[in-house]
Length: 593
Image (cartoon, rainbow, N blue to C red):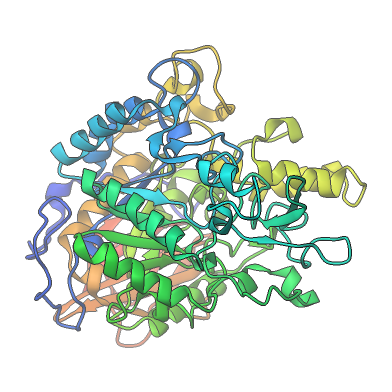
């Protein structure tokens, strides 16, 4: 394809970014911000100004050659993250686990998974993070535990066991499960246990029984384990499926429509706010930490009830409207730019200056960013990855980067079911393909686009065997074969790489209060390819223009809007500001007005 002009990737030195030095504290300089308010009424907090990087320990860096990432491996790579500009590391579960769901089934909340190392290794990692003036946030998984947790081992022994009420047990009905609730990992959400003849509830895998938050003893146990890690010095929690912890005690059947999306029935239970406020009062309020809830099943209208700072519950939640735009209930779908823009505009409108947003389009449960929302072809992978970075770091909210997205890592070329590790995929295969409800070809074609294992392939560090992830002869999950072209060593050496562009965008955001707290306005909601918006704080105003297209565009700005001074862009551009912009395919620009 003949391009509008050559796709020469721009490397704009940070020294050339003529930016004011705002009086903004970052995670590097923790300070009390309780009395500091922006011109438009936001209370300043370090976690609003930070950039968070999610590490999936199993796939980040292996230090001992067993093909599985570990804590020592993470410690060896901290300087890489520091140079990128990361303030906060979110560590996916590192706790002792039988790994039915890769660590989200916890056997012991106060012990490190043997494959990842020891508690001494964790302490060394935390110390190294602090030495680099970064912060560490842990995954808190307390909707469910492993069925190998000592609580559940005791709970299933008898109906009068002291730990029986740590979990949710119910008798069957007419020789079947208690009700028609379904698991997110296929099949019934109830499992019959032969020892007592009753069923236990599991929203996820059978080896992940749900905890009973109605029991105050259980809640006290949870608060104690939170204090255990906070007293070590960790800086907060990402709370796994936290809106599910309060159950509807009627346990009534779901309707047909509810069965299509059970998350909306399971989330926001009757005592959720009570539990979160109690958690805040007894634990979180006593530490200077950040909390972010995985708000699966929570609508945007419900979100302020969780994150409004006056309610003392959570700081932020992950809303899934944007990240799941490319799929509907696990099935890949075509999405449009106006749909994406409408999501961000609605979030801005419904979250006032007492509520804070998260900005993310990838994590360990979703496909690769550039494959889902950009163009992972050889022609446009780099510019589209940079465009997405431009958007993530200029929208209002705390940005979350998933490991490898700063390199433009792509989805894995899956060929068959044996390529997958994910329990969700394998259960769905057994439920749909084996009985003949869906063809193998249709299943693989869809799951290759939507599957979680796309994000879980090992980090691509260099072009040596296994991408430098391990010195061993195998990896727990296959490395993407494109690692020879896409890897951290290559990108660190290339000033025009995706990595260096992420570094520049992170630095730009850190130096520009308007890109953190500034008011947001979508200038052209109906454009099929252009996302143009402003961020304004006081007298400072910035214009962001993104061409979400493989075609060039001559774009006329709305009335009374002019481009101004080009601060940064993802392509080599010498075009002066004005009313009409000539944009190359997947071009992104940020102007100071």
